[in-house]
Length: 309
Image 1 (cartoon, rainbow, N blue to C red):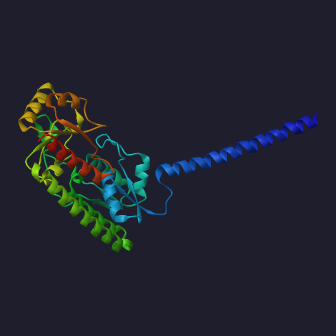
Image 2 (image 1 turned 90 degrees about the vertical axis):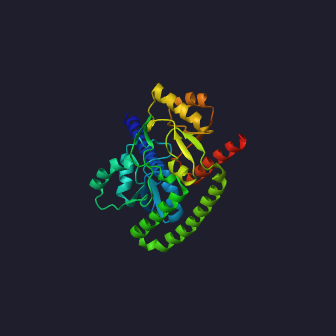
Image 3 (image 1 turned 45 degrees about the vertical axis):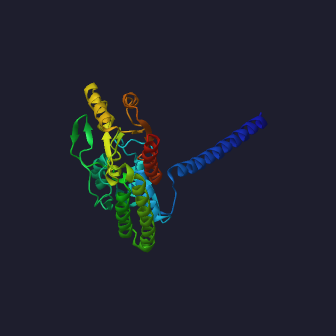
């Protein structure tokens, strides 16, 4: 009887030790998993930006000197964005927050950021860019607000990059020479890219293209193109009357390309394009692959014009 009790007790201890061992493994594994998902831990300094195109531009300047965190992940909708606790914690551990400048969620966040991080440097990276106004609205009604899509222009990207570099020199002066050398090289690359796009798009000056959400206003201004906004602000559905007015305007301009965003645009896009008959091209203005998106936009315009000659 005593022997059986001893065996049972020993079995229970071994069982409990095994349970503790596997629990420890689970905790360690979870820690590794969380670290992998968040990009932490890292001994690099953190800088936070608003959107993925900013992250791309900043990383051309900072290299591996800092870890660039982004509030809005690729594929998220800036018009419905609400920051998570993780995002707010990233801001608390950041050297600075480099905001895009005119995106709606940024303005909504500023009070919250100031309240939780009163000493955090906040830099507007679109400072110095001549704004485009009145591209957002419903139907024929346009709101006189700044178009936030400043990064859709190579010329603007050069200004944004300079603003970013000066911000990094201010908040991380130990690496200022590194940042300035990288900016010089990146700026030369952007200058070449802008020149190449100007040459390619020169024959198309004065021509119009369609876009569901007005994300290419600055691109159009750079290269003498006309952007016709087919959809409404915040991706809301248009009335039948507004829809008919837009279709009539589009037909008058003989626009051949219709840019839309796969994840956010209205189901009306297909219906409208059936009436118009333009080449529909999906774009992602919020993509990390900023340069690839800019070049693909130009390619779509040039290739479609060539096909229709």
